View 1: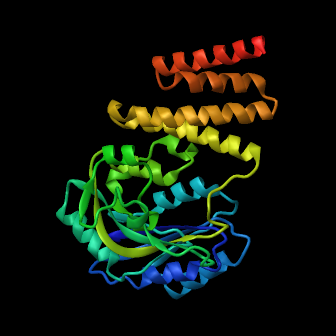
View 2: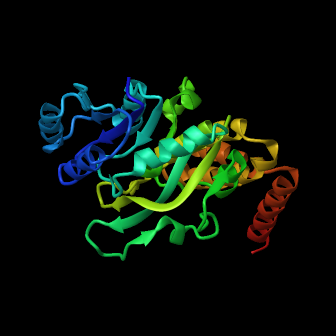
View 3: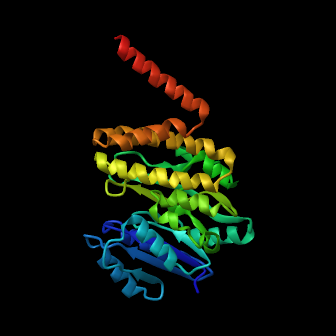
Length: 312
């Protein structure tokens, strides 16, 4: 039984996957490490690269090779489920680790801090085509990530949103499973994990750069067509409602404001698609989600706009 399972999901990463795998194989540890790769039916040579490495390191690499594409969340959750280690580390196929001591360092931290479920560290974000200079996450989020070791609570995650580099995460498997069924329909697997893992423990932060987070056109989450944005909004509305149920009531305001913006955007886009009643429903949700005072303010604005049209 490995002490650490590395959960690696990959799709169309033929240019990057070898570097990710090698960064796992270079880890110097006093315990057993397994690499579990979920290869989601890539249309390039990604699967063949994964197979070649597995043949060379059959005792260290396990492959999950679905016959049909599972999608990001399906592949992610399936690969997580297959990880059997006491601890799970995350590494997507287009990122990589830079320190051979990363896993040992993080396991040592969690072994000595039983009140923490997760250990993270600083990382460097870079554009694959060098069009933008690299920067550290601690530079990107200087008001959140300090220059010294620090512990974060679920309240910090709720207040600040997403600031944790995915490839920096190592956490206790027991703190995550069983994973709630709703996560399968979520948009953000990362942020869902951040809130789930902090239900029963804190996050320990190391101000050491031990991974690189790659940005490239195939990896940047974006939606350009109206119908795709509507689908994305719906998933974000769904997951945000569940996030509110996980955190203390004092943090609900931040999620309510996010829901307000999502519903307003959804209302506008549905109107453009000719879905009038769904548009009205989302507008109602938008003006009512934050609270009574905000609802009254929105209604006054509607009445004022209506009055201006009548008197024009």
